[in-house]
Image (tube, rainbow, N blue to C red):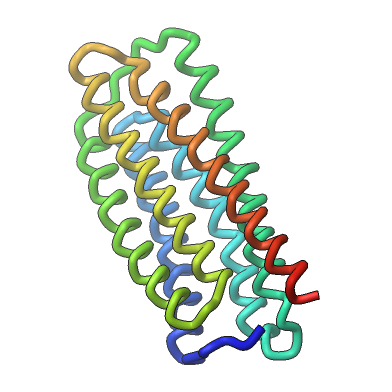
Length: 201
């Protein structure tokens, strides 16, 4: 399979995503610590795990010219990491929500999750454009990873608001629903990548 490549655009997108994910993880963890939001804390842990998968894209960009199947392998690995990270996120929030928590995070989590959602959505649009224009599946997979981050941040936003209004477990139950969506998208990425690998080989 031949790519219509803009090497500068591809490299810039991969490095931008790499450092953006680290910044998101640090931001979410810091806000969670100050606000006391368990859901935002879990999201921060997930973002740190996600950050490690971005190295896969860095390797694939360097090696794709010699190994055309590598971007699809990279996309599949990102999908698997999404499934694994989201499953941990789901289990954690289910356990906390089932224990009927009484702690209510402060409104800093409300604004922090909204800002995180906006930033992730902007990164999704940027990466999706680069991935489509260059026919680069690993970058497209990373773009959807950021869309899922945006959705999970919105889940925290809604959950914190509901908790503030009198339902302490709300942010955890909403996070469980979003985690299920992340698992589904991760599975779709893996299936698509495997189908392309069969075509390449």
